[in-house]
Image (tube, rainbow, N blue to C red; front, side, top):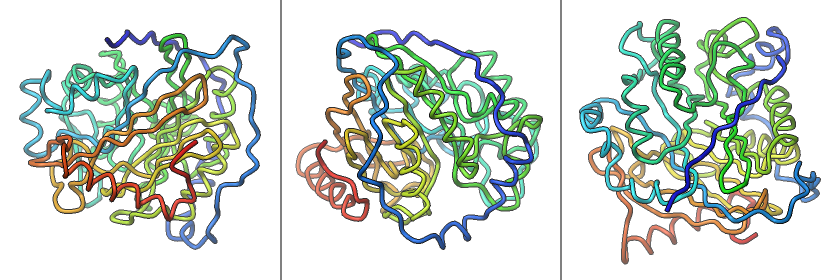
Length: 363
């Protein structure tokens, strides 16, 4: 039976100055894509965990991809206990669960100048909590879809409900700040950031020392520094990223490069999404990287974009002992796990995605 998670919060010192944050984020995705392919270095420094206690009791952590309550999915909030559908038992079965919440939490505001704008009421947090989701990241290219008013509403809803959210804040310190939770004696640090932002919205959406917004992975030095700080405070450090290119099943050079940097900084688990299709995942020197889990609760999923699943990792301290992909499919926007022959076929397909990642199937 799932044990309750005990949240722990700490206050981090204010990081880099606003000018540095905006300068680092000014590089467009197009220029980053021209980087030469980089693979993860085999020589990873094994920074000692902050605790000298005996090996931790193993815990399971579940991750799923892009989730929102847009279009027909909004009606599901009328019954929040069942809003996430038949995958709820699988989400609840893990000791700790996380998804990407790809929407602004507001009923007000003006649409930002972009193709798609998603929003949902604060009851979305009620539905996520009822499904066993312990924390979400809102660091993605829809987190501020309804401008400053929508951002203010999102922050107010987070404060009012007390629901754990990372990757968004009233300033950079709050946006990059990890969420700490103790699970069966293991202290987790969870950080959220986005490497995907529309070029015309980077300045307005990126959190700085004096400006609310999202934690940007485009400012890699700031993100790396937060991981290093968390490494000193936690037994295991998790980074949930919004990254990659839509419909591209292989990681981009900039994803591999950032994963390399974060592992060296002390990250133990790096997962994410954005591409709307699953990407490969695997082990790297006891750490685990998943380049993209695809859609999860998503209104327009069909064909390839309906491929989904739940990634479940088993950790002992900061060491990842086991990884399991539970494949599923999305119908009517709602994810369902596969069984029988369909499940086996989906697993073969998912394992094949690892070929272009440089990762391994086993620790």
